[in-house]
Length: 83
Image (cartoon, rainbow, N blue to C red; front, side):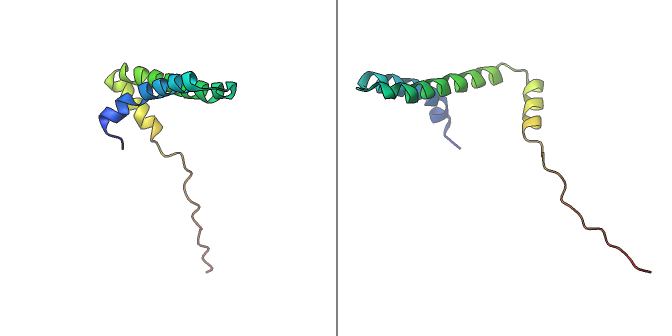
């Protein structure tokens, strides 16, 4: 788990890093990674904003749904008794 200060600053670091990469770039091919980095930062900021503005009940429901086990029960071999 990341420390809270690092966790909070990470999207901002993505944006700053992409702007620096775009400013320093001498080739147009840098635009694709910069766009990916910016879209990642925007998505993270959106997810955090959305999650932090939920009520406690909505947040609990979302987390329980997210961590619910989606695996099928293991196959249990039935015993056949011969009498």
